[in-house]
Length: 203
Image 1 (cartoon, rainbow, N blue to C red):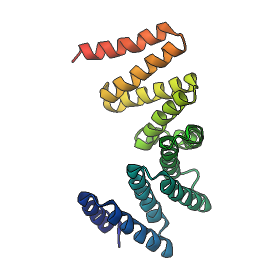
Image 2: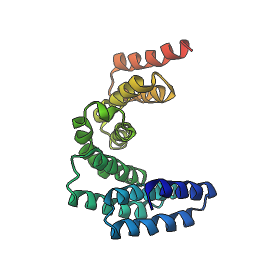
Image 3: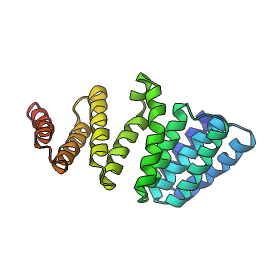
Image 4: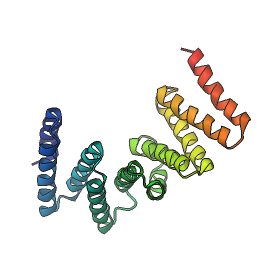
């Protein structure tokens, strides 16, 4: 089975909204990819399984798959590749959503230099955007307001450069303003709120 055929069948299953059947399908081809040493394909299937389990809030299953995926990629010495950073972000999201903010933050920070070393390509990777937003959320949850602000500021800049001052930009900017209130920096909070007002007025 090639990836095109795999994704065609997967989309049909997703359209049926039968999670149990989708899980069986993914696990079947995960075993096939493992047996045939199709490791890139193995990682793709793992990512899809993690997405499925996240949607079901089956975080323990998602964590198990993520652990296997990272272990394989480390055995293949893929730590400097953006695919590995993407995998770290997926596992970090599982940790964050299951209430393990500290563990999630550590995984996000582990992935960050891999993206940054990729240069301009990192800015095009949606996983890098997810990383920055995840770091911001973890910073808030852990009471690390300065870390949260730094991550959200980076995310806002990336969103603006890629998509303009859209709704996502407004949400992140509002988060920055709220964090500045926490940090007792009214001048910077006012600047972020002007960004919101100026963009709204321009519509």
